[in-house]
Image (cartoon, rainbow, N blue to C red; front, side):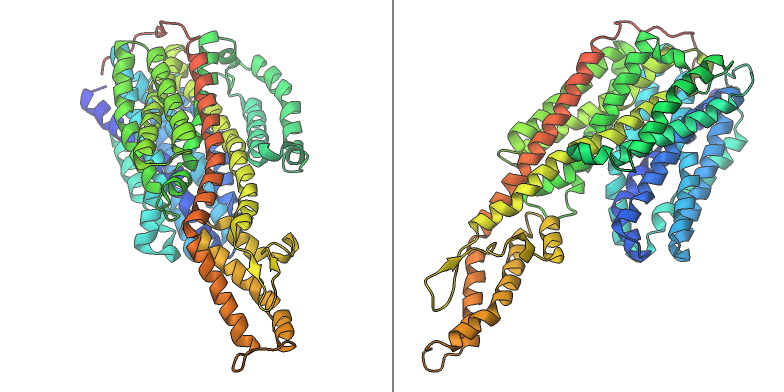
Length: 578
């Protein structure tokens, strides 16, 4: 292939990775907006993300196998086309006003999206000689890392620009890019490495589809902080049972297949098995960034929604370390770069857990996020992709990359459900601690003092409870004032009756006395604003401290397994020079 053609293909493959990765995060801030616009419940809106995750996971191994059989550029182009059509239909659903239409469109979009990343990574990796492979894959890591972390920020910015009623724009922006990529891909010729055609593993494809759907759906619904009740749920145990029953059947089917959809030898080769295990750990650790905006807002006492810019800072550091990691892989080894990445993530997560959560400051937060961002850049793309591609036959690179991505996706599915438990436990302690510091209520005409919680939890309405749960460090005092105001209003008729039966000073009525009493009490809460915010902040930070300690443990596990890798990883074959 001509060098110019390969350069053009490199650009469109990277562009495909960019839009595919960006889309995974860009929808997150729009989920509640879409739910409101389509008049669906919050629980139903979760399917906007869930159905994409399921279809995406299913499509990866199939797209990878097809690209090895029929050509990477051909399957990549088809994947981009499906992604573009799905994006167009998702945008149209904004104006069609149909939730089922949106979900169908998300499936189409995900089927295309699942083929973009592994196929593009495989093509880019095999297009470079071994001494330049790391640098090439470093570009993949940089593009993927930056677009993934910037997704939520871009999504929020677009919604602010076009308005919540035009949320379809989040999907429609993909369409012209997809069209440009498809036209360019059709014009440029490519002679790739094709695998000798054998009988297609249809049965294996069907079984692995059901297997992945069952496992991913169960893991998505499994809540580790309430494990006993969660695993007994009909959203979890039947699907885990399906997975357990089908797994041995799948192994038998794949062993008999001439061209298995998922090569079981990957799991018996020490280097590849370790690479897959580290990929799982990387996926699990990567999801810690989901909680960074909320943690930053609480630590620095920022308004909800402003913490997304902290993720942008991480993206900058990740964008620096990813290409640097690629060059270091070429010069030294993927083992060294992975070790640097996990060590950096370990330092960053520990900084957030032990320093920022205890004594919050912007400088310490920035240092922690910088280390995590650098660690993500080192770990995310280059070394794992390099290890996978240099330990498999060149004709199986796309299938290998798909397997790598699938295993990482399983880690991504499990991690949030584990980490969120720490926040949930901390959240349970917030209300009792806040109620304890509220001033006692001294009833007019009486020396008795009562607590705002005297009526018990049953006196709190569902709306008031929701307001308390959704409050942040900047709004908690006002939420407590509203709560106290409603509680006083509830007691007012009884108090007014008591006051009317007692002797009041001339010109003073029960109504004015109760109103003044209410005003004085709310003013007392205002004087406690700093204390209330500090209690809220410190209590929630206890949960975040444990969360990032968990992320540090994940990074430590990654480092330990990385040290078990061989010092040298030689390619299966020497590829054509770029």
